[in-house]
Image 1: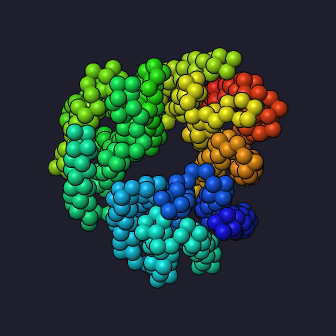
Image 2: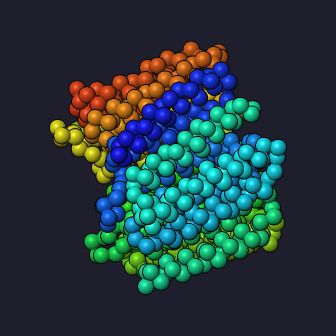
Image 3: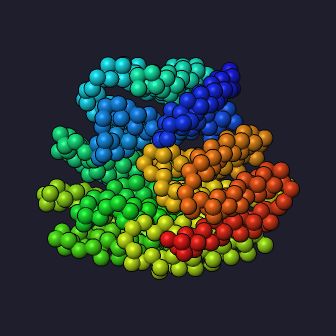
Length: 199
Length: 199
Length: 199
């Protein structure tokens, strides 16, 4: 089951990489939609391959590399959001640092099987609240759909994290990774398709 | 003893994170004082938790993750110093690269129990001398206190490193980590308080 | 044999670091020639020391850290190439991301002894083709020698990778690392000497 999810992710992000590369080919700039998909593709290959995991006492695998790759892809997504909201310069750098901290503390929380993982989780959550409150405080015409994108897309990740074997263990690794795949598609592909339509 | 030091660090940097966040809340830019404290907080949680260490033949623990976190926090501090001295553009990038190299070679030296660690230490020290000579060659009105801050704050780290189990082993892990905590407070909190007063 | 190659690399890049530092000393900017040599020096110390390797079934050592260091040094080299070709802003950021992805996927391919390494290799190769086609599509007066530098210098790396124990295993670790050393000298020292002469 797990490997089906990862193969599905691998194929979907191969296709989205190819698509976003093709439509951005003649633009001369930063093709972040392509880079986000391409980085996520590598992340799925690595999870499919199966090294770099830890196993909980109940025998569930935790693929902690996911959160390191989010550190790379989500800073790019945050850069895209910041552009929409015309956040630049030092304020932008602040958002990118906070995004990286959220994901890095998430990686530490995922890798740690002891109760200390909740400390890492709390730190990640605090950074996330600071990040989101900063981003949403800047209101522009595009705010409306970006606001719901962040609320329903990004915020779902820590909820899955808390329910999965990384947290309370109420859902298993297979279900958790399936949910992450759905969220990855929404936040990294659907978002960029929407962005393309509105720009 | 060690865990007391780490819990103290954890609490102190939680407080300083909250303080620097609060006073910078309404400024719209890069709140590097907050980010430095927040990154250091994560570093202390990780050392308190105790994974990612190596143990010397004499049974002393070396917490090598410290130096990777310094790679993140000290590039931010160097950015602050560069701003004071109005160093920008490519010259600033050079300083940030050198700072990152100092800390990364320091990480390699800390992690390595063989005699080769002195090669890593030497490389780190050479990069540090190049860095400091570059920074101090730029003289501005603020130079005076920044100069003594770097000499007494930053330069004390490699001295502790050389005396600690990472080097000659003349002092133990507990004393070394206590000294690092004092230096962390001086270079990352006192410095930023001073910066705030003068700006 | 292997350790001779690494000691040779270590010495050569110590000398080139010193040389590039000396000639760039009075320029006030980013001394990328020096930084590239210095980063490569650290890489050779680490390979000489011998930690962080994996061993193939045929008993050959793979020094996968090499590719992580290339991620740092080659982004600097790409920055230099981009300056020659007057590529700036977002287009430059795109090139740096692609360069980092090439090397990071190369690291994953080097570290992985299973057949999945060819998936990582393919991803790295795709990123490399996209990178090179982008760089070579920008034509300037300097294009000619840079073009042959990239074709004969950079492109030789994945060929050695495919022939070495990281790939088909047609050549041994000693020969592979000797070839890498020659390529490192060409792409990181000779290139920067040439750059210095033409600027």
